[in-house]
Image (cartoon, helix red, strand yellow):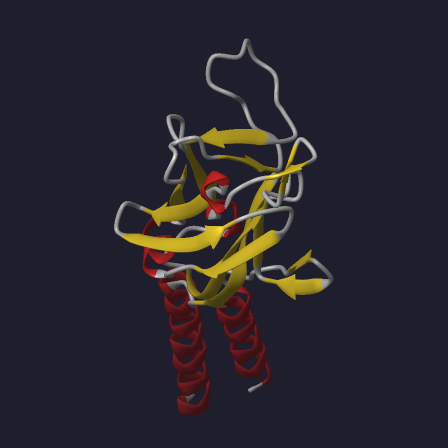
Length: 199
């Protein structure tokens, strides 16, 4: 009976520890995953990373957030996710070289996720912007493709992006192999116990 109890505890521990996710802190709050892109490579520049990237109407920004480092998709399910864009190095459109400018100089920012869902966050200035992300793409392969475009009526829009952060929560799905091992362990222990009782 003692061995049966030990086998049961081991099987339960195996099932519970399968696909464990550790929490990361973002802005003072814990999330199950955090992926921050803080350095960028500009097109046409000879190597090197830059703290901010300039987005213009003729040069949209395309990049990926990857959370596969938190485990293989299928071992977890994303339950909620957010994307934060930080334009804190972007100048205010109320002033342009110290002169008040007209509204049509402002940049209007639109994000496209995986080419199938878009978010228009309107005119941006020196601030952070947060949007809710559809979780189906992340649960599919753990990667979120992002395209950021800017526009204005004059065709002169530009915006300076400091960082992009993807963060959210996961629900761990028990790995079938671990559960199967636990069941087999319980079955073997039960058979041994029955043989001992029959003897």
